[in-house]
Length: 362
Image (cartoon, rainbow, N blue to C red; front, side, top):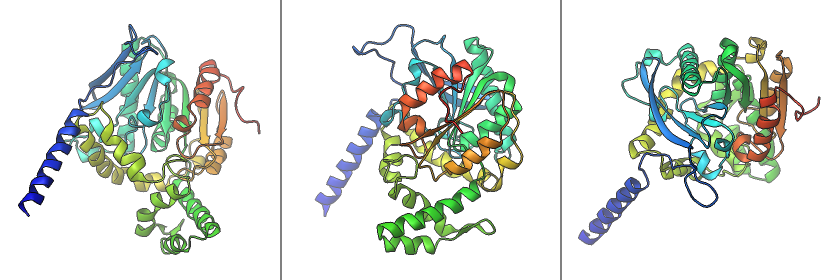
């Protein structure tokens, strides 16, 4: 028995030591093909006061004179810089890439954040303040804004509120009416699992109701992610489990400290309840369709987290100086990470030129 306890202690100590070794809390320098640090490049962690509290971001660019791209992560409260390890976008080669971690999320999480400040209006104000910090620091009158999932729900409202600060608004997995999306997701998965002959999952889904009237059942919330990833319609097409595809990769990111990694999960659990019910029932198609800047939607054909067909309906209702809709055939919820070459081409060829030449015809 003593030997078993000793071995367990050694294993825990070794695991803790390993976590410290791989958690220096600094983003790696940007390197060229030979492994040398690129002269004049930028790869740093920055903390500034935003909305009265410290908020942090990673900024990476081979040339800080490149256009600034502000990325709004999903959730609410779930950071996405970790995706760059397994799904590198390469956007730092073309843009000054800013991975801001929002109020209450990841590096910006603190137990001292006043709960009464966790409101949509405060998040919009925070985003504008971050944009102003970046505009001033990099000497750019307008920057690009790119929102993903919850970040797209937030981002499109920022774009409507402060269009003069942005070259364009780019959406990835645009939420339109999330409750309707959840209903459609369950219907699709019931059909898909029946076709597979997976009667056990069918029974679980049947016992996890979702409706426009009653909303989401606790059973659905427990089953949702597992069921989506089981058929490739979740965060990405190839992530088969939240544990192996999201949870474990977060712990491997060297740019975070151990405290940061713990706070990513604390922030996700803490932030979500402040926004989820309002996000779920808000129909953006019915209330937010006129924009004074170019609007671009990047949508995965296999996305049932934010239903791709609903994103298209919303896009068609929008009026903007220029707009473009781009369907990624091999993507689910994260086309920027799943098909980065196509996304980069769209950003450089269409978005930066105020064009929609590559957009889907309709």
